[in-house]
Image (cartoon, rainbow, N blue to C red; front, side):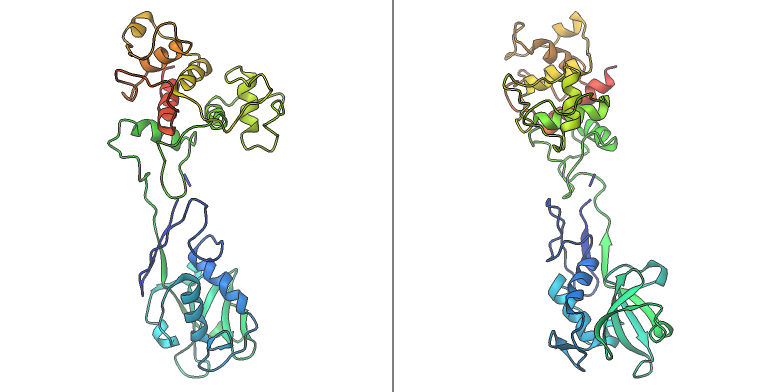
Length: 337
């Protein structure tokens, strides 16, 4: 399961979330807020050093760090170097991350006197008096010996350990957790599972083949499933196994949503599920008659249900299959053997 990060700023709290895109809610595509700040700051490389400067017309060291933190990530830090040194959490040199503030001592005065931003790869982005804004190595003969420490004002909180929209008290929790742990079905980057989202034919083929692990002999068969389609391999494998067939016009329609009737039928066939007459007799849906084309699949899948998800007077077979329903059905099929 891909994870969403919350960013807590120790000086001025600001909370930002990953969206489903998946992009950070800042102006650049970066893996972290710190990297976004560094990427933004690199746009000003070459801007001259100006004592007291706080704009792109000219920066001093703390004016530069304050500017890029505020304008890229909306994070307010103090104006001067010694004030910036008072905030955040001390970080060991071996644990530096992009965006950490790097401090130097005994440059133009005794004590803490210069600040930059760690840019990764042993480099510091800072406003220098000689070159203006520049990337400088941590091992630079002038700056290296004056290194005085680092502070982290951006801290990442661990993402939730479970989906925010699937309660552990839900009857389907065990099924969803089992399949996500095995990476048969995944969640989303906003830490949701989206149990009510519909399952497409292409997704169904991929989910089943992550369990069955079938290998196709021919990749390209359907005219609407090119080899570049993300589900092409699984669709080909599932077709060759006779689990999900295409249509008369030689299309597979991978983006078409499937019904619960179709779900029951293909899963019963895919996992070769059998059910006794006694078990079949106990399945009584008012909306499913014995002559229905998906009757065997419905009865079989319901009789092996270990979650209670499919209990009720009706099966609602014409309704679209959801991620939750499909997960439960696959879980039951795996554990029926």
